[in-house]
Length: 410
Ligand code: ARG
Image (cartoon, rainbow, N blue to C red; front, side):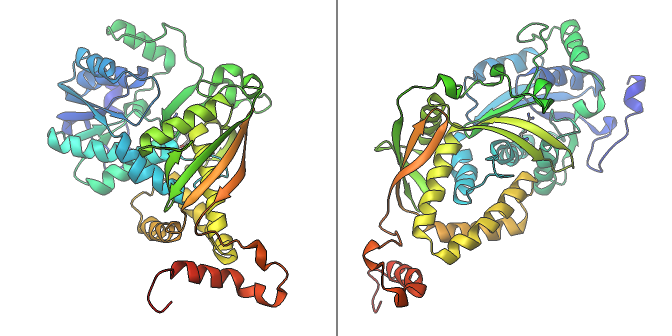
């Protein structure tokens, strides 16, 4: 055991001491950090490593290549789990029902992905008889909190290690380590200026030139969304249809949720929609600037909240955004298993029982604007304008009638 390892100070009770680590389940992305980790854990902890890579719809990723790389670097075994359906159905859909945009702009794609990744890590760790889970998060961000919150909640018996927090290598030293240990580095020695995370609900860039608040994001940040100035000169209309809060069709075509979100992302990206330049309050206190590319979320959330407004009473519409904000905060803060979130989900489901219908959006050079709506549950009756006396209870009465449609004695 080298000298500096023995001086490592544990930061949490569940962090493993070197002697306790026999077999590690490593959350492996195939990038530089986790590739260096794969080797480093074998050397420094003299432990076996099982790699797990989770497919949440990261655009353009070749998961077979990632798996091969893990085996090449000495992993005992390497698994790829396609969790796209589960992610869409059990995570993103809940966020849609809660119109989730943390801080008014961030649709939480990373925050939603972490608890699922951590849950799959726990399952795989148990299956493969690992005693420890390793992740590649730094000590500065939210992701360490989210992953460790889920692991320690679901599996108090497992230990955790986070080598990036303890190895004191910078980007340069990591590349040097990679060279001397035969780890292939994508893009040569060129140090990529941004930290990227992505899945089917969005993409984030942080760090490097983005930290300079006095400058607009450089064009080289954008990988998904067309810069609005270069978007088509003709606007495009897109209709999104919902059943009980779940998007079920786009442009008249019924699709499974994963395909629908991919389709929404494509058309939005083409029109420059979904760029969010965001100042964000992190869980651990820092403020950071993120540049998000979230075309699918921009379309679907815009349409969903518009439809929800049409079918909700004035009272529901005043009340729910406060709960939506609280929902987003809990998820952002890594509290996926907090009971309050379950309580809120029951409320979101109940409200969304009425959110059936469609919204047509007009996309044009970075803008997205609802231009048409239709719903069998709309609390809308232009005929009734002018009957002032009746109007105070109008929405509540219409909503009552709609909810009791077809029921006996209604
Ligand atoms: N700021 C966002 C969040 O906290 C995005 C984080 C992206 N993660 C990353 N490791 N680059 O959810």
